[in-house]
Image (cartoon, rainbow, N blue to C red):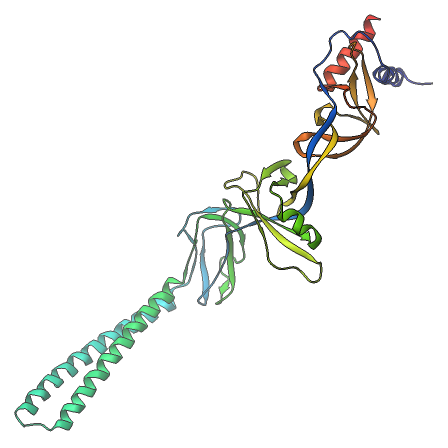
Length: 348
């Protein structure tokens, strides 16, 4: 024997599925008709940052300070980490001392050259002595130049002990920890600019000509249930010989909230137009395995009609394959249509 709740549900479903006349209040309706819709081709892709950088150590040393972690926002030039700079500082000090000695040697060579010139002019020294004094002066000057270059190099090495952000962005990965030994080439951080993102998708070669000849490209961010217009589309002039696909890069508008590198996305390329029988998505009712819509006839009678639907076509709605004829009206608000149907049945 059926329980009261089961019996009540069966009666409610029977009432909803049966046509009735003179509804108490006819809900807002729209006419189901053929419409010119844009045909699209969808390709799966991933969101990626246009501007990304992996920061690696350039000098050896122990990491003595870590100021950021994954997920932190950073400004251009902000200090991210420090490597022990004692060895680099000692190198700067040594080169500065050697440069001071080189300056003294150059000063001495300058005095000797001037003195020798005077002696040669007075015939108290030979031309060979002047040549030697000139050579000593040139050697001292060159040596001082090399020492000053060493100072500049050691200062540059010292600056490499401070890791800074090359641009404003977000730290996506921290690849080292406090106390680790840094070695030249070892990655420490990965950062990206969240303002400039794109979607990379692979398109079969036989579809490239179709998407190249049409405009209208939009990106569906599946996790956010959001559809975004493309800012720019670039079709790379090469194909993958293994998959026979071509990569297409779709730039997104700047400063999108909630969109992150690595998110799954679906790119919709417009490839033409066609006439299809369309129904608004909000008019569709789904109950268990039944898909339909509330049809309202000319007398205001409401009935739930089972439909066979095709694929959604953007904002135009969903294609109807069977169950309704062009020109019929459907309720835009299924909840209001069901309420009016129950109210009418109650008055009978």
